[in-house]
Length: 461
Ligand code: SF4
Image (cartoon, rainbow, N blue to C red; front, side, top):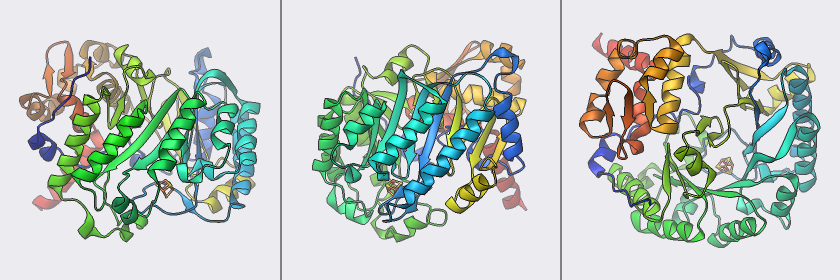
């Protein structure tokens, strides 16, 4: 049985550093433009080399939103002109056709996710048309995991019912915080009633899993208000809760410039907020899955974690098998064999490339042998909280302790803090260490290490 987990605030303070979520390794900021449409096309075509191909996962990016949330770091297009979605869907159909024609191997889809932006910005007819285009090219079965991000503010009469009919069986709702002051400060007014009604309706329609996103570290957020939000979220009993850390990077994400920095909670309050959320969610029976995610023990993610078959890719954690991921739409990221790729980020470029019958790829990366072994270690840490040293040695022809000598040295503070243990066979993360899994993974990230060394060097000179 899950017990309430208290994480020492001193550790939360010490390890409160921004870092990647490792939905890929290397992370997207390491992708290069030398990986172009031609390279991507060739990897689509050789997907089934050797007669074997992994099942498919699809990600569809639907970028439109009716209004801006100031904390947003997504690639979106803010517009009130609903007509813009129809054109986008037409071009998506072209991309779907091009990719499916090039794609070798089976076309069975075990996982699909529509994200954004706000997928429910599309009209009912557009949602149905897009799903029909996908079904025309790919095999989507009843048991496929089909999820979609919902903005309760955009739901019309019958939207959830339609999504269920189209085959979606999971939904994810952005809540962030119910506190009206926080909602005003981030320009996202979404009543509790709208959210709770959407959850209740989805449950009634038989959606298999409902996820709620929360964010801590938002302007005007405080422990009392966030505790009230947690009360309501826990009462509504979503199957999954994602608890994200707000990273204020106004130089990178323009909408964040509209946030008044004086309203941001102090470092101490942030620690109290995350500590409170962990305590409340684990106390309410949620299992900590890893990297910001909690799930009820009955949810597929928690089951997959217990059975040691959890996966992580660009769609986050998954209970399905290891897949090739086809990303569709602007800025969508894909994973094909030993490569990652990302589409162009603007509508203009996207339409232009497709007009010229080119795959709309902006950049990507072909993994090196070193990337592959590090990715395997990071996957083991994120999904199983342990690394089987011998298996990694056999699979990647390395001597673990020698290959990762520097990393093992850097892990000593984690070992001393009781977050992990290391013996001849296993690197194991403790129950406490699970809450710092991102920090532990970062030790194995060669690119972060190189960046740190460069920074040290430039400081030294
Ligand atoms: S947070 Fe979501 S709904 Fe808000 S602007 Fe960003 S993508 Fe749109």
